Image (cartoon, rainbow, N blue to C red; front, side, top):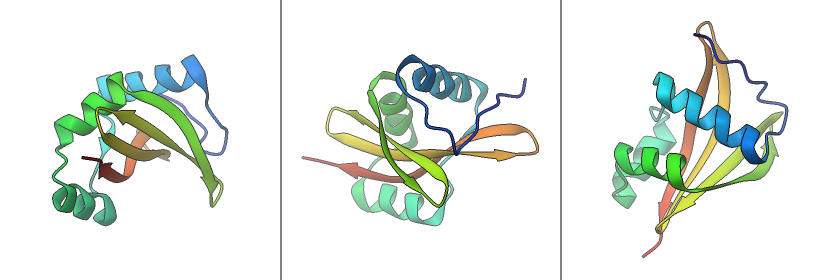
Length: 102
């Protein structure tokens, strides 16, 4: 099932939560960006913690960068900055960076 999302259109509230949940449930999560992988290792944040933060955390719009909206998920001292992208299979949730606050 392809999930459609326009990365240039800001999602808010329930609409943002619904897209995030649908992409996570479908397995369309990418944390393979070099920057994200380095920050995860450096800040000791696991993929499971990222998923938990995206599923149960507070979601908010962050900013528009190169025509794509970035969003923030926060939960229990972990921040996840993410965006959406589209490939031949449909939408993908792409983790840009993570931060752990102690």
